[in-house]
Image 1 (cartoon, rainbow, N blue to C red):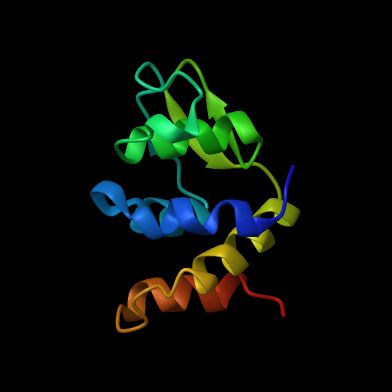
Image 2 (image 1 turned 90 degrees about the horizontal axis):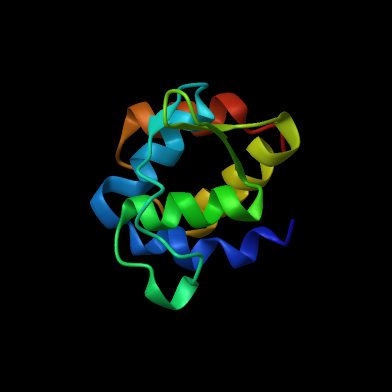
Length: 107
């Protein structure tokens, strides 16, 4: 898995509330993903599902094929994603999401 800097531009795209989906996964939730659209080419990313599918392929998220849900696989990845979300200038006015970031931020 590469540096979190690889995923910051993807998070900044914020397609269809992508950041919110990532924050939800940081809290332990799973997020529905349609993995059928992306052909694993980052140049062709066009929506939230494409970004999430690409991040699944990179190993940042796990994927349950039965439920078609993505999730954060472990604490190491969770910490890397927290850093990436912070680096993407996430809207800090959202108290709910900021609370979730602070809850999982161990730095």
